[in-house]
Image 1 (tube, one colour):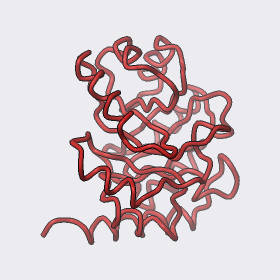
Image 2 (tube, rainbow, N blue to C red):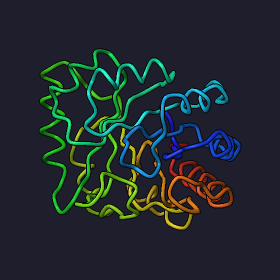
Image 3 (cartoon, rainbow, N blue to C red):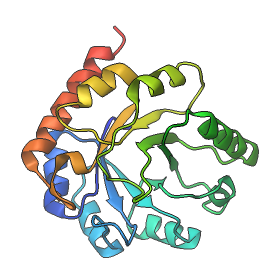
Length: 222
């Protein structure tokens, strides 16, 4: 389990910035069409500098399951985040790899997410965590769009879900409000802490992690 994930890490320097700021998870993007995409060689370089306790998560979009498994082991990842249109049956082909399933929410509620997870349960392929991002017709993620937090918060209260990672449009300025409203298990940011796609802004990374951790502390049970 992690709490603060900095996604779209493309260099050792940016990984070190995130780790020193207190992030406990890094997202390494293997979707070739993304401006934040890296290859296995760079992922290994980054991973070799990541201390124990920081979770390395590979982000994939509609990739061949054989490629996902190969990358997982070659890059030394800790979990796989599926951020595309992968059906529940797809997860069967990943064996026992730890899965974080991402869902892009538009106008709808979590009904489709519930149905997907129920089918996964019937197939015996549960997700360790789920990630909720904002829907965009133009991209699979990293768009800076936010989820409807009040609606999501109300919907989550009515359901038994795996630990929730909140993504979509989070910034140093709004992450605390999002955490206090939605009560996710973790938050995920990419564009909200960048100078440009694929290059992190150290000051914004530090501000984001500090704000997120303070907000998590404020909602922790006493």
